[in-house]
Image 1 (cartoon, rainbow, N blue to C red):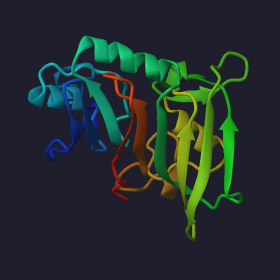
Image 2 (image 1 turned 135 degrees about the vertical axis):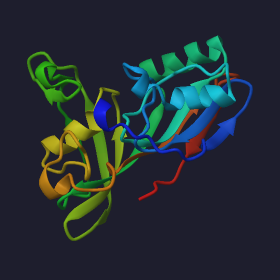
Image 3 (image 1 turned 180 degrees about the horizontal axis):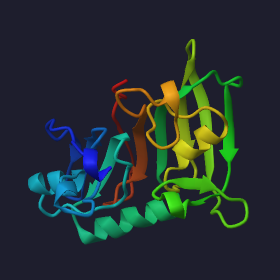
Length: 215
């Protein structure tokens, strides 16, 4: 990753901003947080902090995933949102294009995940030592050699959606880690965080933020 990191330079796409939070639409190809080394310093966090110096990290998206991310603007808001993610109170919906045709209209994948140490940051299924992970999916549209699906993760393991779809034989198109051959040969990874539903840290009102997928 470090050798070919060339993040997009499009302007920051702000979906919402108030006194407690700022919500943005992250482009694919941009790190959420800085990597190791000056060449990996450009990331969404630093770009958000350029506009909102008080912005604090709450969660992350993979470099190659686009879509909705929320940042806190105060320490109490960061703690509040962090607990919501930890307690699975935040409802996340992704859109993906996956290889092949899913036979059923909906289903779920429950496979425990753990880091694949010799190949990190890749993750792998391990029934002995993996942490529980659950992904629900629903078909939106079937194509000739692919399926467009909505993915609703019930847990938040690293690379969860990517590993789960690959494990059931339908890797996400363009995935540099878990797709191979023609399935990998796409201009970007076809995974987008379309919607976040959470409770606003000031008052607890249910709030939904959305960004349409760019594919």
